[in-house]
Image (cartoon, rainbow over all chains, first blue to last red; front, side, top):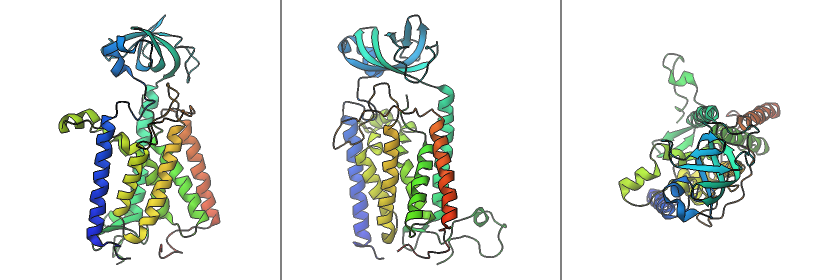
Length: 187
Length: 175
């Protein structure tokens, strides 16, 4: 099939789409709330400017530094402390009470400048994070590996086209297949 | 806290959906299943943020900046359309449809995540900043979503082999 609007048309469409994408990332940067989360003020907003958020619903992420009562530090230095009221009752993903060193995200309303009355808490999982990064890496490797096996870039057409058969390791490691190598030598 | 499903689960779900589609529609081959898998992880291109954080780009360009749109409706559509342009014209329609199906599955999974606020992300931006209530089903650090998705993947893989291998042998062209 020919390019419906010629190569110029294709290039123009690509440029327009990239311009739209650039517009979106700049626009999103200017949106006051964090689009990737629930949109409530978080510890980055609240910690340096507590009095402005008293009485509001906020979400605070941090590390537990004390358990009776539960106190979290929103800064790695151990500063930015808030006391959490009802943190254990609102814990969503664990039955055990919070312990020192746990990473938590607590949502509730800021009663005064250092007290958060908690509705819900989620607890982080360090081992789980390592697991998540590891399997995410392999997930990406699998998908992109399959893509490289099934599709190829045709320089003649300057476009991605499917391979006639999936590329195998024998095609890329020299000396493991006699004669013509490369699963993409069909045209 | 990172509120995304792990990439492996997304890719496995993409494989399951793609393989089921290939069983239903004989025209679709292995390479098409791969497109659904790529689509299923495509919203996580937003993780480029880990290498080039919003703040860094914002500082360098001296203008507000956020990678978030890549993981929201508007950015997903633009990325899908742009990706389709990289393909030869006869494959573009398939690329758009299959990548979009994969991307939709990504958003469905991510909306099921547990958050402390009880709300998910602004999935429909820039149409609206409205956030759907979070599904509260799992965290990105949970293991069982990948296990369940892996089990489903093995099942559809076996099903596909029973139905008949629709590989490269029996369909010479995609058109």
